[in-house]
Every structure is written in structure tokens, then in C-alpha cells.
Image 1: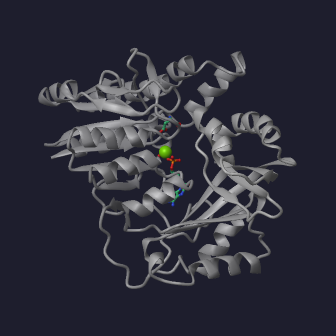
Image 2 (image 1 turned 180 degrees about the vertical axis):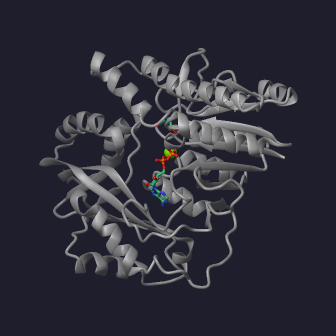
Length: 407
Ligand code: ADP
Ligand code: ASP
Ligand code: MG
């Protein structure tokens, strides 16, 4: 059996925790081919970024990636030393040494292919292979990182390349919950969740899994177990992300996600003529900014209002690009809001049951929480609300849909 395990930042955040991980890895390695992907220790990626910004407020992307990649090298080297110390043969590899090749988009590189010969060679020599997550080698031979939280994606990509039987993601919670347990302590840990549901949740801000990791799991049909790095090994528990999930006895919301970093741009009174949307979104797409939600109001007197949202650090550049665009298009006004969050209900069961949206809107309104924007997909309903009410909105909805109760 071939298994890929991944340990997140908190799980390798101290010498004591590294030793704990080494014991678990050694136990799992008995008779199996085991690749272990590690994140940087604790918050060290944040520390490295802060350091970069101290010497240059706008650090160059190539060197930022080189710097950030060192975090995962530290933890992979240390974990390997801890493994060897307890008699478990192991070897540490950087992403490049493990054969992870990416494109050249520094900061959010995509994995192009993985050449597994070195890992197979190490398996044949009886080694556990400890791979630095979050990184790969660009076509020019540079270090490129996969985007924050990207070690999950390294793990699932290695799982696909090695044709692993399972990928195990070990983290600081017991598995995937009905919502972030830090926001709602009554949240329940799910036994399993459909890949499509997890993909929506990850894309909508549930930080527990990197969206591209879930996407790869779905594409290559690899079951992913998310579990605690603290629980006793083999004690069961955790959440299985997989293609088919047993039908719930009743339709329900499976999980609620909160995306904390949403900004919106509203162009007011834009002349409503064919082509305006492409004039606005073309330049944003050219700048590599992915626009999230677009709402255009019904036009009145040939004028329309158009609102769109972006997430994360695309905000600054979006503002830079859309201000002159608004003037060019003859908009009366352009409004920016940087204090929004997205609250999403997710569940495949919602497709067939009516009333979810109505209950969501009523519950928020009863709590006096104003909805700024609404968007939906087949298995998701999202409301944008003001950031200061975001966590409360999650708790209100968690209670409204009785997610703390076992079905
Ligand atoms: P790691 O460093 O192991 O990658 P992360 O911090 O990236 O860990 O992800 C784990 C965190 O994700 C948890 O501590 C939890 O606060 C958060 N989280 C958000 N949504 C959920 C959810 N639905 N289920 C479990 N954890 C969640
Ligand atoms: N160390 C990286 C980060 O903090 C990657 C990861 O942890 O997955 O984003
Ligand atoms: Mg993570």
C-alpha cells in the first residue's frame, strides 16, 4: 500500500510536536510506502513574509517564493532527523528534488507534473520520503510556491502521481466540521463529506483544506482523510472526503463556510450598452484577477449599477484598475467596500429541498444582520454581510439549521 500523509504548520510547530509526528510516521511506515508532506513550522511562513516586507514593502515575487520555500525545507529536514533518531530510515527532499514541476506563476504556481523516479528510488532503499510541501520547481529552475495553504495540494498531487491508496491530511482539528469550530464551538465533526461539497466549502473560505487539493482529489478519485495529528494513530476518527457519500436520511446543509476577506466594487449609473461587462472584466482578467461575484441591476433610463467582488490580496490591484475604468465607461460614481465577508451554506441535499434560502434570509433578518449581496450555485447559497457581523451570522445559521444535532 502507498500512503501520503501531510502534517500542517501547527502539527510540526515545535520540537515536541515534530517528535510526536515522527512517532506516528514510524508507526505508519511499517510495511508500506510512505511519503510525508510537511508545512513550515507554526507561523513561520508569516514571519518570513513579514521579514521580506521589512526590507522591501513590495518584495519581488521570485525572491519571495525563494524565501517562503525555506520554511518547508526546515521542517522536512528536522522531521527526517527526528525519524532517523528513532530508527526509522527516512530522507528529506525539497519539492524540486521530489520531482514537483510547476509553471512560473510565483506565489500561486500550479503543478504541471511530478516525476516520481527519485521518490521510487528512495522507497526501494527502504526510506520514508519527507517532502517539503507548498513548493515546486519552475521551468527556469526557480523555486515557486503554490499559494497559501498549498501543502495540502502538494500532498494530494503526490498522492495522484504515486497512485496512493489514500491521502491523509493531519491538522489541528479532528476533521471537517459543520463549520469552523473556532467560530461555533457546537460545530460537529462530520464522518464524511462529498468532494463537491468540500470543494465548494474550500473555495468559499473554509481554510481547513486548500481548494486545489480537493479539486485534485476529485479529479484523480483519491479518498482524502482529514484528521487530528494529536489523536492516537489508528484510533479511527477524522473525516473522509470522497466522491460518493451515503445519502443523508434527510436533505440538509452539510457545512457553513466563512470567507473573511471579500471586497466589492460598485460602478454606479454606468451607461447600459452592449459590451460594458467585457470592457470592465477584460482588463481585470488580463491582470490575472479572478472576479468572484457579479451582479448587474436592471437598468433604468439606460443606466445600470454593476457590483463585483474579489477576494484576498487582489484587492489593491482591483482598485487601481477599476478607478480609471469607471471614468472611461462614464460611470457616475465608483464605490469600494473592503469590510465584507461571505457566509455560505453548502450541501448537495439542498438541490432537492425547497426553503433553504428562505430560512437563511429569515434567520439573518431576525438577527438584524443585513444582506449586502446574494449568490447561489446548485449546492450553495451565499450571502455577503458586513465583516463585523460575519461570525455571528455563522452561529445564527448553524442554529437555524440545527447543525449541532446528529441526524
Ligand atoms: P494546517 O496548518 O494543518 O494546514 P489550517 O489552519 O490550514 O491547518 O486548517 C485547520 C483550521 O481550519 C482549523 O484550526 C479550523 O479553525 C479551520 N476551519 C475552518 N473551517 C473548518 C471546518 N469546516 N472544519 C474544520 N476546521 C475548519
Ligand atoms: N506554509 C505555507 C503557508 O503557511 C503552506 C502551508 O502551510 O500549507 O501558507
Ligand atoms: Mg492548511
